[in-house]
Image (cartoon, rainbow, N blue to C red; front, side, top):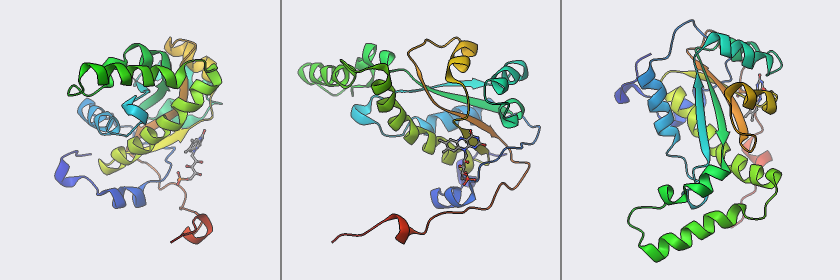
Length: 207
Ligand SMILES: Cc1cc2nc3c(=O)[nH]c(=O)nc-3n(C[C@H](O)[C@H](O)[C@H](O)COP(=O)(O)O)c2cc1C
């Protein structure tokens, strides 16, 4: 798949083209494409710009087979050319808050922002901290699947896995949250047809 910007799908076209794909061509994804997909993903918005999402990109069939076993044996975990493990690390967010504060913010403002970021998680249970990072990481997951689609790659977002086993296999600390596994590659099936509520079932317009 080519990744030049001139050939990238528009956002509406990528949205229309995306389906969950569980069978991929046996074709590696160039490292430059993976980096570009993650760079585009990193542009997702987050509360106070905390960017809690982190990624492990797995392109190792032996490890993928172990992850497949930890994901109720879902075939696309083991067979996808790339498996992106999305995790969120609120402890790292707090410890490195300075990195996400815009360089133009003066010292008093930086102090305020650091305090606000620490305040998001202070006194929270792990479950509460995970709820915060999961809702924000979901936005990044949306960006990721559309960025991939726009560059010619299909994806399958998954929540069907045992987080404790995935953490163990990837040597991730116990406090991190795992908002999704994402299989990624060139589609080798059309996927299911899209079936959605009509807008009028989902929304009401108040003016
Ligand atoms: C958060 C989330 C978790 C999902 N978990 C799984 C999963 O574990 N296994 C799977 O095969 N599909 C999973 N899916 C895919 C959904 O079944 C799929 O998105 C939905 O049926 C709509 O189909 P579409 O993605 O082709 O439009 C998940 C999707 C999302 C967004």
